[in-house]
Length: 313
Image (cartoon, rainbow, N blue to C red):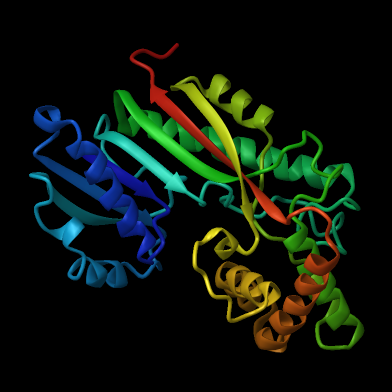
């Protein structure tokens, strides 16, 4: 049995998912596969070496567990390109990766100057550009996986999204709005160049349910079996039992956002930006927002299950 983790990153959570899959397969008893191959996919600059080091201390994934032998391999490359041979995979999954676009939508520099993502103040051209880029990327992703996954094979995807059709009607990505405000404040202080801010946009898009359904139906390789959503708090540790908080939620959220956005900031702004200063101010803004917010501040997260069609039109 061949399994792929698409957008695996480099932390221990990757191995937890593999362990869970092995545990579930073992419940099939005599019908369980005796061997599985797991392909860990991410961009080439991902720290695969760290993953392989973690495997040496994780007995659930590098040795026999419940009579299932697990072999793990790295598969570097963008999942917006081909990764595996035809009809190779039985199961593929991805968590918190599909909302990353293959590129920043074109034409945003002139239309989204005060924002780094779609905001309630963004003109229609901005949300349209993001939506079209997601449609192209997700359709391409489905087509490629349709070639790589066997007939009747399964795929489970979890990624950021939104609960409303119009992305400008509700600020469901407030963390990015707060980062825009942080950078704008630094422009006013002369710490960031205005032109640099106006040309900075992040390649992330949270689609609606309707956009996902339309793309799956239009591409045609998969049946959409099930779609659910969960609300994930900005400070995800709020849901952990017996968690002793040592930092404010503002600092925790800032650390999480910094983990995936710092590389983009450094590449775009270069040495002219003080990243530590950015996220110190950002943490304060997040904390202030959380202190006055009536509703729990959460991300909207899609979870969808698909089956590869036995025949396609």
